[in-house]
Image 1: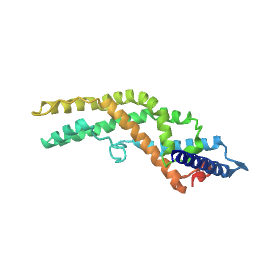
Image 2 (image 1 turned 180 degrees about the vertical axis):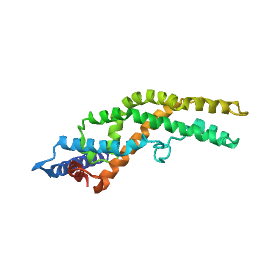
Image 3 (image 1 turned 90 degrees about the vertical axis):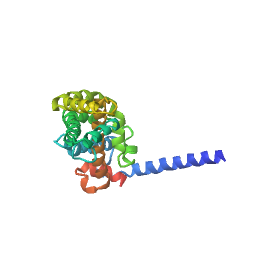
Image 4 (image 1 turned 90 degrees about the horizontal axis):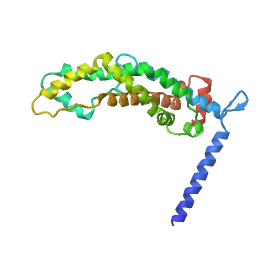
Length: 236
């Protein structure tokens, strides 16, 4: 029985590969020749560049994170009780300000770090470009995440730390947490907000790129260049 199952799996895999190759062989033609791997990779990079240009740039604006429900940075779990307690004792404005400055720091960091992200996209070589193209709606974004997240974290983290100081987040949160810690019947908290906001900012960047990638994959009107139209016709 096990042998039959393994044989079936092998047949399915071979069939899938054959179908993939057949689709690849029928790529749309441009200037009289079939699109090359380089063309496909260029199309995918162009899609990611559009995600940065059209979507990530929105995150750098005032309230780019704070008023965008897709990426708004909320309090980490260990600080949610701080927020609730402060609101319960009439300090809602302080709690609101504490939440806002976390998002301001992310907006400021993405503004400074976006060129680093753009360079990372340009340097990506999609050796498996066809598989990515035929993948899920966010396959290129997921691939990009796996290849850049560690390096981008190293770049974002010091910028976030600097941004905390620049927008006054460090002082506001020190005051907020100190105020909370003086309240009776509460346990002291001291989370690593720099690490938390860095990860949230990175996730926000990838989320917005995925939004644009999905639009390009599913909406012909979002394919704004000839290359995008030709390359993404493959996965229609």
